[in-house]
Image 1 (cartoon, rainbow, N blue to C red):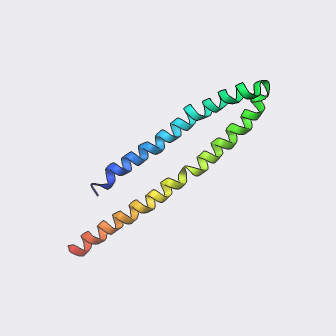
Image 2: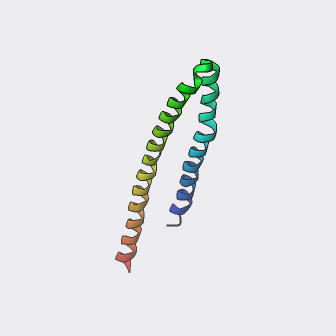
Image 3: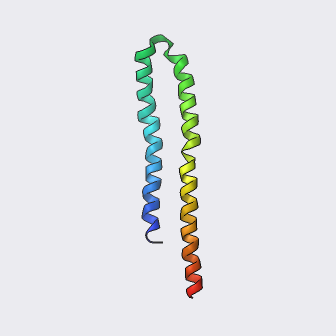
Amino acid sequence: QTCALPILCWVCLGFCLSIVIFEYVILPSLDSIMSITFGNFNENIWLWTRSLLSWTFGAVWVLPIFLLSKIINSLWFQVIYIYIKTS
């Protein structure tokens, strides 16, 4: 239990940072690259690209959280079982 809490905090921080980096670093960088590459056609292309990337990232980043929660829950249930069995 004491070991799982710091790991959970670091993982949550990593997920939050990944969202911030995606929204404020990766997407603006791609916008700049696309505006240099495509020029005036950038608005229409960027609208579709940003929507697709945001939707994909929003759908996919939940998967690691789901899997991690399953692992942590199984460890916690194991600790609870051992505690109940020994007392």
